[in-house]
Length: 197
Image (tube, helix red, strand yellow):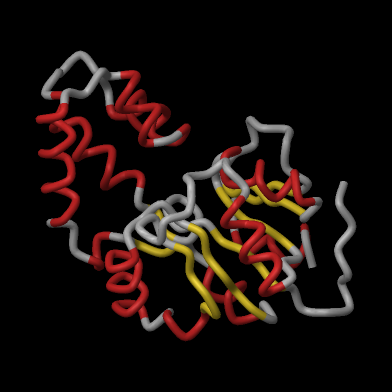
């Protein structure tokens, strides 16, 4: 297990969807609507989305028309439907510094953070439209690590922590005990203080 310096506050790199905000239920409903197939249950769609959106769209063989419809429906999601996980704001407040790497477009991230008053918690955000390769490519993590000296990466999928493992940064998977790749696992941010700090 990766050792952290518990005498100092941490610089944390966060993922967005499924890590800071419980967005998968909203995306699952949209995805299910696009599929328009009663035989496919939401639980199955959720599981595929948790691997990655690209994986789910390939798995269900979404057409370009379906992908376009999905994008339009996503644009209609209001910030109040994107609920933050319980206890995560306390971890954001605790950290010495927070940065983010997400595949989500910058404007969407900004609008949701602004709605909750959370822009103040992030020193830097690398968003999906900033030109970096998608995770698990480590290029964006290298950039953020060079600029901020990351102590811990928190994500909900293996692709969120693979780049950190390559760089020797401590990793935490949130609500994902299936993977053995992470140094730490959390199911509830209120346990952060017992498990990590």
